[in-house]
Every structure is written in structure tokens, then in C-alpha cells.
Length: 485
Length: 92
Image (cartoon, rainbow over all chains, first blue to last red; front, side):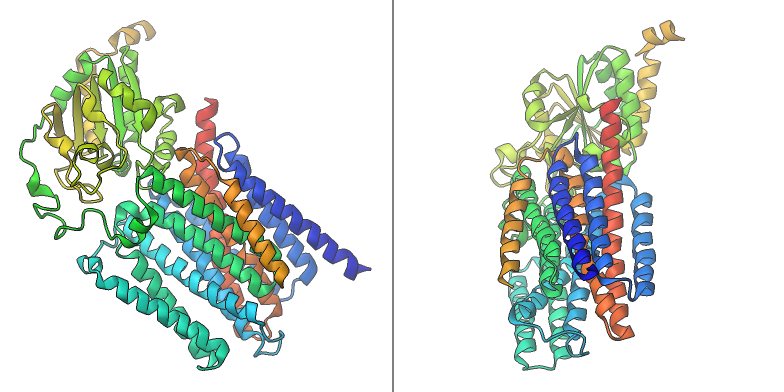
């Protein structure tokens, strides 16, 4: 009786889990349903765990508890502690750990037949172990490199831009495949072959990710996310779980689509991201006159916050262009305060959001949402570009490449062809920046040299606060204040 | 076993269909949510712990479980944190 009843229950829970996972992924792509969908997906995983434990029992429960407390606890801690500015890094870290899990599971399952607790692996299972280790290891080391780059712990070393890197990566891939073949064929002892496969795959993950420039990291993380789905599906073949195969395949395929969507938003093709090297690194690196850097600007106008405040006071329509620099300076709240002051004076305020503003598509929306900026004021690129000619003042805050007019006009620019915010069409442009240093991608920006562009040098938060103070002393927003209090 | 290959094929097709148009606002949360789902290898880790005949292999299973749960728990919570902001903004 029970032997019939329990597997049915397990099956029912698994099917329910697949349904919820599919609904969850679908719901995550719409703003209204996204939060509930995320919850659905979490419930789906809980159901799947319940089904598995009901069928197989709690043998080894102490080990399970250990994994739950340490892994789950660390995950929850990181999730609550991380500042919103570091979100892309954290997604990369989580993703890498998923890949490591698939790798370990496959290695463990490969050792089971020798220990006598499982029939020898058939051909499909052998291939699956190799795929799971290979892809899991690439996901792990690649994600860690991506995280280190986003945290700026790791730069893009010049030597990684040499064409020879392709030969090195090919050699690593060949070594991984040779070890993967040597293991089932018995050419090498199993532990040696699997260790070789793991080591070569880990190095391959580093070799593939290290040459890619920081600006392209979002695409890389999205792709690695897709890989971790593939690794999970392969682990599903190893342990004979169809649920794992479905879920892994879904994430793998959905991740691929998302990667494609992101590439389109950045006007990059996936092959050029993966194998083209870092943008702007074709010169001899940062600071060289050819590639772009500090030395290459000739006609810069700089101005003080006071002058900028005067321009704001006279404006009828102001557009802010927030970038990652704004987030780093933690200036979202100061920006919100300045925007509110301008609005009380009857000035129209909007925020222009480039699809890849921040370090990841959608990152800037999250950061501004954190500062309670109204949703309706966040305007996407296609919608706001036609409005720049009737905009009096544009203030660029810590954004750089996404407002670079060279992307439209200069075929020699590495950004050429990327859709940008056409802020150069506005009557006057103020760029708040710490210094004239190149952007994250290291590309020079022609906007800075335009006659109607002024640079306001300083920390974004400090400048915004000065602007607010200046405007108050100019009497902006006084009328409603007198009526109110 | 060929059944499993069908499952792989159909699962992949489903994944391709599920995500069509995604507003840029949701790219980061969607990536993070999908990433949490890929931590489903925790099921394989649980199976490994139960089947493992030696403490060493059980330890491998426990470490694998820890990594997977780090991904799952952290991934879902961090996604929820991001999406909670959109919710608050939408209602206010």
C-alpha cells in the first residue's frame, strides 16, 4: 500500500512544483505579478523538497540539517545585508554557488558505484556527469571572476586582451574534454581523470571571463545564470530526477533569452561580448591618448554648483540622468530632495533611464525605487529621447557611456551604434562627475567637449546638496512653503 | 532513459516560450529569481546524502546542499527585496 501511495504523492508534488515554477518564471517578467511569482517559485522548491523527503526518508538528516543551517543561513544573511548598489555582484555570487553545487553532486554520484551503493553509470549518465562538472565549474569560477570585477577587486589585465588567450582557452577546453573522455574509457584512474576535468573546467571559466570588460559583465552574469540551469539539468540526468531536468532546462533556456534581450539593449552581439575582449581596450589601455582617458579632452567648460543652480532656477523642464556613480555616492535621496524642491517651484522634472544604466539592466530602477522616486517620473530611453530638444537643463549624475553622443556620430568610437540618451539635444547639459577620468568602460565621451555642456566636478551627493541649498537661498519653492507652514 | 531526453527538450522549449518580452526594469530581478530556481540541485544533494555509504560522501553531499541552499534562500530573498520596492512605489 504505502509503496504505491508514497511515490504517487511524490509525483503529484513534483508535477505541482513544475507547474508553479513555470508560472513563477512567467510572472517574473511582468511588473505587477513579479513579487508573487517569486514567492510561487519558492513554494515550488519547497514542495519538491517535501516530495523527495517523503519518498526517500530522512537518512543522513544530521548532514541535511548542517547544509540547511550553514548554507541557508549564510544565504539569508547575505540577502538581507547587501546594499542595493551591490546587487549584481551578489547575484553572481549566488549563481556561482549553484554551479558549485551541481559540480559536487555530479562528483559524488560518480563515486557511488565504486562504493557499492549504486549500479554502474550508463552511457547517458556518464556524459551527464562530465557535462555537470564542466558546466558547473565554469559557472562557479566564471561567476566569481564576474563578481570580483563588479566589486572592482579585479581589473581587466592588458595581457588578457592578446589573441593568444583564445589558444589558451581552446587548450583548456581540449584538456577538459580529454579528461572527460579518459574517465569512462578507463585511460586514467577515475579520481585523476575527474580531478583533471574539474581543474581544467575551473581554469576555463576564469580564462573565458577575465578578458571581458566590466561594462559587459551583466551579459556575462546572465549567460552564466543560463549555464547554472544547464548544470542543474545535467545533474538531473545523473541522479535520475525529471524535475531537475525540467527546471534546469527551463532556467537554461529562459536565461539564454534574457541574455539575448540584454545584448539587444546594449547593442552588442553575444559573440562579440564573449570573444571580442574589453570595449575600449584596443588602444594600449587606460590613459593613452588613442584609447581615451584623462589626457584627451581639450575644450572643457567647468562651472560651480552656484552657476548650475541659476540655470535650474530659470528652467521650465529638467531631466536627470542617473548612473552608477549616483548609486555609489548614495545620492538617490539627495536627488529626490532636489527634484521635489524643483517641483514645488513648478518646474517639470523627469528621470531618463537608459536600459543598461547602473551595472545591470534594471539596476537603476531598483536604486531609485529605494529612494521613493515616483514610478511615473522614470522614463525609458525611447520615450524620453524625442523630448530632449524641449528640455532646458539636463543633469547627468555619474552616468557616462549611456549619454555619449559619439555612439551616434563617430564610427571610430567603440560604442558606435549603441542606443544612447540624446542629452546633447537639450539646451544646456551639466555633468556632475568626480574628475575627467574615463567611464567604467574606459571610453572618451564627446559630450564633455560640447559648448553647451558644463562639468560640475565633485561628489554627486555633495553637489546635489549644494544645489538644493543654493536654490533655497534663491527663493525657489518659497511660495508653497509660506502657504504651508 | 530516452524519456529524460524528451523531458529536457520540452523543458527547454517551455523556458524559451515563458520569457518573451521583459521590461528592462525587471531584468535584474528576473535574472536573480531564475538564478534561485537553478539552485534546485539541492534535490540532487539531498539524494546524495541519503544514498552515500561513507561519511566522506555524505560530507560532499552536505557541502553541495549548503552551496545550493545558499543560492536558493539568498536568491529568493534578494529578489523579494528588490521587488518589494516596486510594489511600494506602485501603490503609493
